Amino acid sequence: MKTDKGVVRTVNQDCCFITTLANDACFAVVCDGMGGPKAGDVASRIAIKNISERFIAGWRSKISVESVKNLLATSISAANICVYDTAQASEEYNGMGTTVVAAVLFDDILVVSHVGDSRAYLISRDMKLLTKDHSLVQELVDAGQLSDSDAVNYPYKNVITRAIGISEHVDIDFTEHKIGSEDKVLLCSDGLTNFICESDLFRIISENDIEIVSDMLINTANKNGGGDNITAVVFSK
View (cartoon, rainbow, N blue to C red):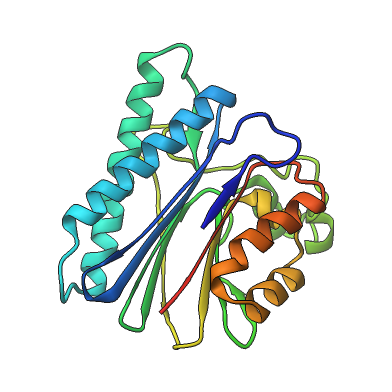
């Protein structure tokens, strides 16, 4: 994994985490903070800490898929309350929030949960987007008011419709997938996907060793403008 402030921003509001668990499971999280340079940084760090600590504490061998989803839900919901309470208690942090995308790979199953526009991709013979952005531009595309090509340069592309810490309750989306032995999973913030097209993402990840992929992705996004914080976490079975 790697996170970078990019070439334009002075502060990195992204935060990421990855670890292995019992039974060779892998757990990873990416958060992209918002609400001002300091507040966004605080929100993403609070969220990562709460989600990772609660999820790891609740993990056990021979856990069911539904229990994994429940554990993700309680971990993310707890982080939401913590970010929300911190924001309400301080004028400096009022209005802060963060996206989250979290994934658990165990046996041949991948469970993904997300809030906001940070994404998860599955890279196999092709590349598949596993999450659907909670964003204004995605809602306009879904409503037929904006084409996919126009969405790429939409001026309000950064407006998200769900985030951690904005209210006392948060809606979390979940997906479940079968994973092959050669498959790779990418979790990333929009600072990556806004500066590298999906065909280049697929080429870089599929053609290179997993140990160097995150560095290559960050370097490519920076060469393409690096106009936002950039985070890439890549893992496989």
